[in-house]
Length: 87
Image (cartoon, rainbow, N blue to C red):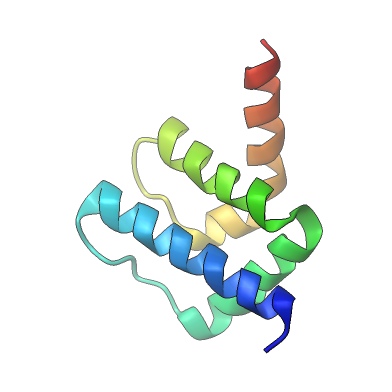
């Protein structure tokens, strides 16, 4: 398994663990399709930035925390977190 695919799995598992911690339940997620978006966001932004974005997502948003929203808006989350850290 390539390193990028493994990092995508790591990110997806990190998101699932964060969701379980917040809601005490597993998210409704199709891991078969989510693994591709996880790989793509890790490829674009790096695993560390993506994990920080997961943490930020669960900190600033009160409910929902949908994987599809996260994977489509990682860049926005990263920018918002970095902007807040600079303030």
